Image 1: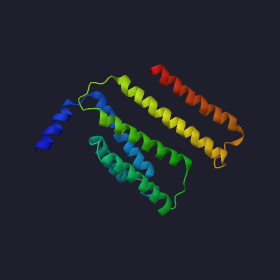
Image 2 (image 1 turned 45 degrees about the vertical axis):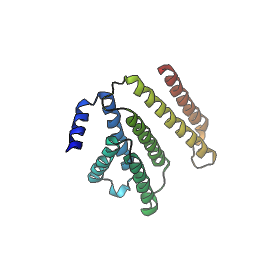
Image 3 (image 1 turned 90 degrees about the horizontal axis):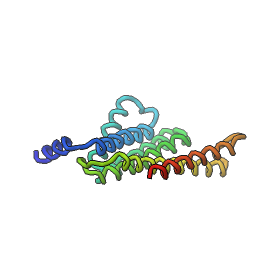
Image 4 (image 1 turned 90 degrees about the vertical axis):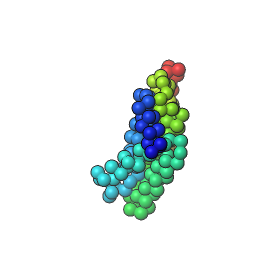
Length: 180
């Protein structure tokens, strides 16, 4: 009973920024599980279960739930590809890796923020800009490496594609510098 009273008191004191971070963690966790689940089982029930499982890391970001969600997503993806014979597609792998990193980063941020903290939005904005810069940079490196080994065909416009990706990374770096 005491635990329930403490939880309701914390919920009443919660401010907007910690709530938004935890809500984003729920959304990212749900998306992670939905990307990982075998397509054969992708329906409303699996989406509801994914949402329910994604609530746990938002409620306890310091503990075991964020790691358990990541391990569950990786296991689901392994079952989907090895067990159900789904092809390994670059977009799905990139989405899963990006969502796993975003979930990890948001869980770390949520673990640092007390429920009732008065945080300026610029703090979280800077965190999100760095998160997006890492994701974009990783995607650029992945596509360039796969193109170099011949796994991804960029067509006759390879220079334009790589130049566009480099411009996107430069724009992200510029935005990060301006926000400081």
